[in-house]
Length: 285
Image 1 (cartoon, rainbow, N blue to C red):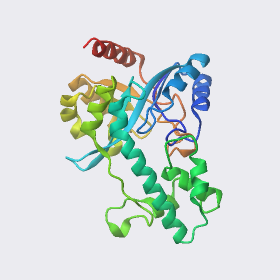
Image 2: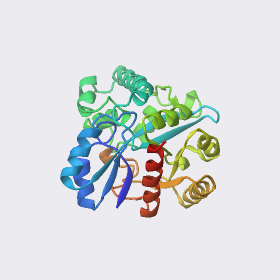
Image 3: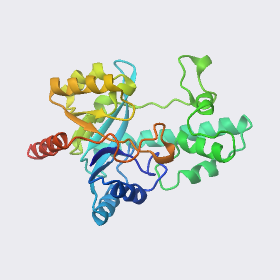
Image 4: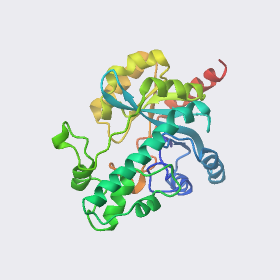
């Protein structure tokens, strides 16, 4: 079983790297891509844990990007990236810092609004990661009894982007994402294979042809947020532009909005073989 999209506590999953890989081994996953948001931190450790447990770890990343041409968010997976490569750190470190500052502002707004909350409590839930995400804030509020779920009515009330200022969440703080084009280029510079993640979620299908010209090599077909129409569209684009069709659980543990388990929405073996062949051909360049 091949899962090419999975997170750990280093970004916004509730489980540690060791716990995630142990669960993967128990589920029968043979190849697991660790694709934390905007960082390659912990990938060397993950490879060692995977080797001990019999799970082949693919070093990866999921870059939080934006399609400024069409006004949509876009997530770009990088598979087989070089951990710690400067192309990744130079692009993503400012984003990590910006996200953490935004989270501090969100917590301050909630405290001023009367919520029984502290930054230390939230930060403790994010310990071992690159910083605080909205999921950590919601987890702290859940522990205080303000809600019974990470996602739901309270999440929308606090953090909804909204179509206008009136519909915006009371603690919504925008952050400026990197461009999808820069994400693709950085992944390639780091020796990785750029893959467009869950294009159905962010309506990225129209951008595929343009991004292929910049070096996009794959498209995520199997994903918990993709319906049949999304899978058909992604598959058609893959055939048109010779893209590798990937798949993965996008596992986030307790912080998931899909309840997807490790190993779900797996990649096809034939497509994985294409991924390996594509990687080998890129290494020869």
